[in-house]
Amino acid sequence: MSFQDLLAALGVVLNGIPQGLLALSFGFAALPTALAFVVGMIGAGFFQSVAVISFQAETITLAGRLSKKKREVLSAIFFGGLGMALIGIFGLLEKIVALVGPEITNAMMAGVGIMLAYVAIDMGLKEKTIGATSVVVALIVWIISASLVHTIVWSVLISCIVAQFTSFEPVEHNEKNERLKIQPLVWKFWTNPRVVRGALALITLNIGANISFGKLTGQIAGRSVNIDHLAIYSSVSDMASSLFGGSPVESIISATADAPHPVLAGILMMGIFAVILFAKLLPKIGRYVPSSSIAGFLLVLGAIVTLPTNAQLAFQNVALNSSMAAVLGVVIVSTARFDPFVGMMSGVVLRFLFQLTGVM
Image 1 (cartoon, rainbow, N blue to C red):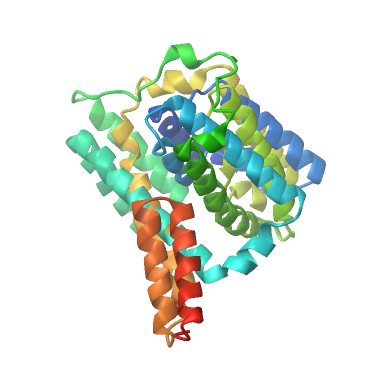
Image 2: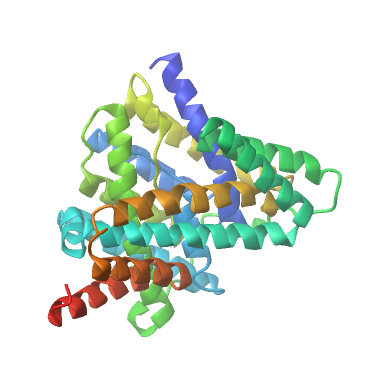
């Protein structure tokens, strides 16, 4: 291990802490989430994969908005992880994307960008001074650096300084959650429509995220990434975490891929995060951080990065096909308004109807 490996690992941890605070603001427990990082370390080491898992704003936001009932949210994450694990074990990930079509998958991810932007605006309006500071700083830093790491660090740091001169609500957190106690889940999940739909939404989002984030991380490292292997250990991580009340932890685009020893650097990063969570340091940090401080980063991530990037990929080959463009528009709007599963399926059904009637 080199000093560069350590620096890369620490950089990714620093990037993940504000998103971990986002998870706390949605009511997820920090200590049980450490189990997810342990599973991630084992999975990356076993498969010798450069793809890592960490707090991911897209999945956290989607999961946190699924239901007001904690039991339903954790059940959706657990069963979504189980479904995703089976997809990975049977090597079906890329086959599903090929069946659905990359255009619809990218349009779904663009809709997730709108969803993130909406949550960012809602967060910012709760504490207008802090939220406005976070948004302005995030936009300025992004324009100067085009770096999400710099954007999240500076927007959170400066908005937290401003918060010391005004009243604010720290990231909400229940200390009673910080224990490794198995949570009651909806075992007959098929009888609860919210759990079924939530699980399918998470599976749909993670199909797109694992392929895009996993492959991009592999490109940075100059190595191929088996996304089915990534799906296995990322989904088992979700199951381990949610079973005890923790947050979903998914694949990310990681700077550890650019380290001299990318596999080792990734394992080190997940190990550092596991130690932070086991030591209950994240909730302590949350006492001094207003929830609205994350608004700027979420707005940049959703409206400036996720939405235009994926929309461009979705529409780049359909300029002369108005019917397909209409399908993708429906996918984006449906995803933003409802969830990724509804968005993707609406696109698949509409495309089938167009093909059936000979329009496409």
